Length: 187
Image (cartoon, rainbow, N blue to C red; front, side):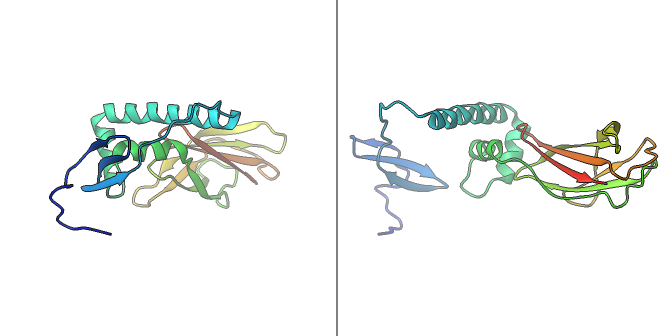
């Protein structure tokens, strides 16, 4: 039963014996059972998940030690979600390449490749590698965000690629924790 204006439990935190734990989340008191630790041997998958959470926790602690980054994560978090929890979620969520469009790439300097990339927090960088039909790298470099367009990046060719037909474009999108997503397109 939901209660309002319960002055006895408002602001409570801590444990009541071994039966209940009181926590404050988003200005509300949450009552739950205490966490149970089982002294069993973890499987390989469980050990892997625990290791990944440990790395995510380290990343979140680095975020909290940087005031500007902490404020940015807090601003991006939903109500009731801490900057720490948002950083943990970001660590586990790689960026997404929504679209990579090489229709305007002709192989000549100045032609472009358009990338629509998103992340649950922030795309850090977009790197483009163009190979010719023989599989040799024709050029590579960073794409730049398009001013005024959310999540759109543009790579402008700087080198001449005499015959781009049969070549490939590899797009790699990285987020702040270091997750990477790669997509390849045929020219």
